[in-house]
Length: 344
Ligand SMILES: NC(=O)c1ccc[n+]([C@@H]2O[C@H](COP(=O)([O-])OP(=O)(O)OC[C@H]3O[C@@H](n4cnc5c(N)ncnc54)[C@H](O)[C@@H]3O)[C@@H](O)[C@H]2O)c1
Image (tube, rainbow, N blue to C red):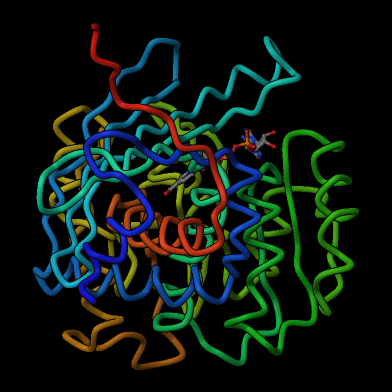
């Protein structure tokens, strides 16, 4: 039976779609290991030109907020759709009961374009983003690293810390830093039971920068960066993984890196036209997926300073959406909603 016939056996394509809440997505039982495997596959497919994914466009209704439209088609997966994702850092003060990041996906039938599912993608985003950082770490960092640093202890900070030992199994210390003491406390409370390494509340950005061989960052993206890490604190041999674009480091750090990778060159060049790299886009060595796919070597010496800047790609969301959708159909999870009702 073809993939599409399998879907048709469970869903009346064109007449209804499957609605999946965040809880439904979790109830499918999709695992972090599956997300890791699918994310790497999607990054490689994109950088091998086996996917269609235009650079994301966005709206900015509040200062430093973003709402991104992210479509993708992966022919080998027979998967296509679009994510509509937002980050509003000011929710923290203005609407403390609401998260700063929220996302939804419309998952479409690749043969007819009709919608198959509308699903909450907040959890998918929460987990696939550190999964990208883990792919970058796997190919670009020293696997024997014993120290890891995390800038930003929000949703992404916590998810990164929980997952990092998948690729850095020898970690002994994890240094975390946030503007808010309460965010660091919350991270330690939530993450320490899940990791072997000791999580240490750093007293300053400088401490994290100077103490960690591998550093990830997830703080709000300001249109004009206000770097929190000075170039002089960063040395050869470190690996810096960012999912927050140009937010954390002084520009000189990117420019002095021996290797600078991005998830999508097209995306970063578009961001530059929006004014995101006011000091100019650093020299791009390769896409992170091209390194993961073996098209370009990753780290070749312990002394290299490597920066990997991955702002998120729709291919990662859509490949996971397909897995979630398939599992939901199989397990009969979710609510079938009519697409239209004819008037009689
Ligand atoms: N690359 C991707 O695919 C991707 C996906 C999701 C989110 N993001 C980005 O990751 C970032 C974090 O997202 P989140 O959902 O974790 O948000 P969040 O609001 O949950 O967490 C952000 C944390 O950063 C802290 N922070 C703010 N300014 C800081 C500073 N100057 N120094 C240290 N800490 C600071 C905040 O106190 C907060 O705890 C955002 O920029 C978001 O756009 C990227």
